[in-house]
Length: 608
Image (cartoon, rainbow, N blue to C red; front, side, top):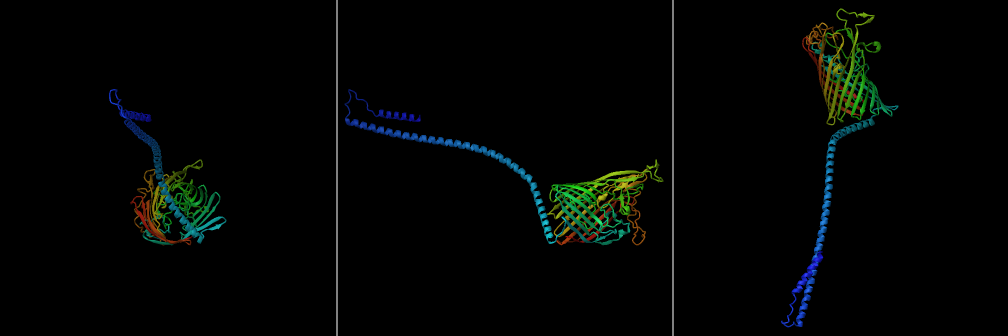
């Protein structure tokens, strides 16, 4: 269409130009006709004009073509711009979608990072502990190569152990005791020994152990025997350490299955005792102490038990044990005598007649859980259930000393039982690559005094002769430092037993533990008796001093130095100081207390 329009325009322009150049026609009466020369000139002029018009048409056609080319180029550019815009819009949509995905991925990554931070911290701690463990294992391997530690016999690995000790104890107030201190027997100022010092040297804490280990396809079999010489035939009993001569510290066998279940039976540390790794035998954590009675506030026993434990991925352990039961002591003021809980040992039954044995109605039951969230922390919670029983005769009072008879059977004697128990917890942590060790322990309940270190009583008695369990509590805090070749330790512990008293039938006398009035005469606790005693090895007794112990506290610090620890064994020596305070319940004459300062030294050689 554009082309036709341009052509018509060119024709019109040519016609107009041609018409303008024509001369008017000559009238009949006008001038004469032009000459031949003039006609040629006009013909030439028309030809030139036509040529000019052709040239002009060509130029216009060329301009039209150029315009068409420009229009086509603009159309192509526009199409390209539209395509690019469409592509850009698609890319923007894709980018937006990717941005949304990237934002969601970033949020998920942040969540994952936050979740992994704790795992990274644990991994670092575990890696450090693992590296230290590998170093220790490598050290033991190198030592074993140089000097074999075990004997292999018929598929069993037998490992001897123990140490030889030379130790001393010096006490401000004499107690006639070896390197174990009976904390609940500290003499009051009224006692003659309370005004003299004592020194003893001893090698009796030396120890020998034998460990036997074997493996079958489904389990590991272990047997362990450990003994020392801290006992005497007349002191053997079932109260806490079951120290029968030669003193049997531990003697047990174990089957540890591959699924984490372990069954152990024999004489072993009570499940009450803290362990360093899970609930594993031979990892018991004792306060660092030269004193063989350890530290006031520490909870423990070594006695018969059958225990079963389960290991859950080295993070959680559960355990249950059935253990020997015993009454540590029945104590108080104005107690009746119309009851019994047991009897002295029967020589024919291989118990010493110098020790008392309760007639137990059932074993002690101990439950425990241990948890190790990291390689440098260890937590425990545990509980004890026990049952005490006595036989009492409520009609045997005053002048009535004969049991009434009815149809040939005694009717005045009655058996009575009390269920008792307690709960406890342990927490231990390690800092500075295990060179700093912090620990807390607590245990308390009713009738559980024998599980605490100081040996406080379990029971008192009602006026009619039936049993009354006593509430008691113990706790200890420890700080241990382990620089190279050294161990420094600081312990602070305490134990408490509550008073429990009851009026008799007439209301004239109080009966029980820690009686606050008459019958609890402490007027003579601070005055040394004038009676010189029987002479020789029989110091005088005290005057009126019947106060019952309320609490015992101990503060201890000491050190061990190990100049050599290698494939030939270990040599170490140490020293310790402890201060012990014994408080009583108030009676007539007040609430006296006693204290003692004790210094101990030790030189030991441990077998490799």
